[in-house]
Length: 345
Image (cartoon, rainbow, N blue to C red):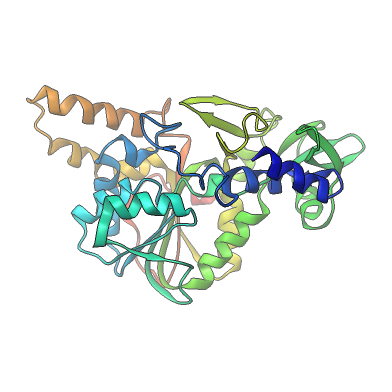
């Protein structure tokens, strides 16, 4: 992985954008973090996603999906845990679009013939798309607002930060962000393109983006002056993206305002935006939890702990958000029946 990155930096004249570095470190075929087949997910991996905690997240999400028609297309299905849970509650055609060959093999082994794998987005899709903890791994540009102008933070041959004047779309976008100087953060141009691609495919139905992040006014808060880049390895989080590239996850929080704007520009409607906790409560997570026999402590304790992690403001409840956008959906969605924060986007 180091040789691959250094060769690209050398070929580019000694500097590449951080977005390109992140793309290589995460997605380079056979070498990147998501491409090499290591067990990233779960207790034995580097981090735990909501579906990895147990079935409570998926069973609650299924209550929302039951309100919508058509097949399900999951983008970046990880270990296949969410698909496995949803398939138990939904009698629905289920597709997975997975860019990592290694993860796709794991999903196929776990799910068998119950799912169909796609090589690319369908030209026309009618149904529900789900992206759970996908957008945070889309390569983002690193930006610095300095006294002498707006800089793009890139990577030098020494695998260290090096700043150059921002140009093009990145400079145009950064100029619209009002922050105190000096200030460092991220702008994810590719995430907007990703949303526009999903919108072009979606003929009718809804897209659910579930991830950690903020609306723009919180993303670029004056107190968040060092950005949101974070690395994960063996359940420890740190801020050094140049440590062991290809062997650790690199993420940036999601700017949900930017995703919503890209969706609107592509002709989609914003159907709802809320914290994960509010969304799950609206979908009836307490009813799902009540189905567990509370008298059986051995069975109830783990699922109660799962609910705590999903809902607690100190865990995933507040930091994780749910954004739903769609086309032709003429009904209010259960998950946003209370506490909809679409007005903050």
